[in-house]
Length: 210
Image (cartoon, rainbow, N blue to C red):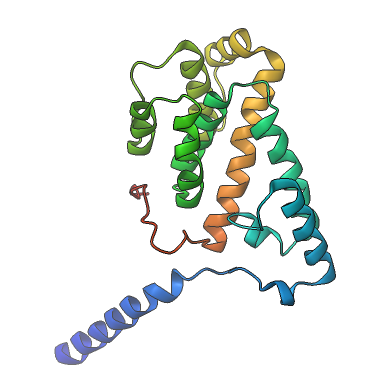
């Protein structure tokens, strides 16, 4: 009986190990352009015309719903390029969101942009490690605290709220929350669809225990 049980357990272990690569496969890989529906083709052309590059990253799974993809693009265009926050802060918030969701593509896509926008590498490194950065500027602290609170507790305390409003104004706070929400949406989509990194790019974020 013992030998039979041991053999069964060994078989289950082999099955579970061999199943891991399959589970990691991209659930919604890029659709060849010649396989697009008419709506997807139109959406892809509009996307490329506005962004200057072909559908990639989170928009690969999103193109399965072309209207959602295009509306997401419009919101992203505002939050990334026209928000009331400085690009340094916007990109820091995107990195925080990528870290909270362990979203590798999002981190890779925005890490260098954040550094070029003026975010100190030490701050990005601390975020990657799940640590509160030291030596942040006042506006960075205000953006960091609100982002971490809303991501982790789903609420924002009065002191954190009041500090952010004083620093960014009400429009700035809504844009700050919008960046958190928008990039959470993209992270959720890519995590669920198992959107992979480009070939040869290593995952930069370690996976924390649940």
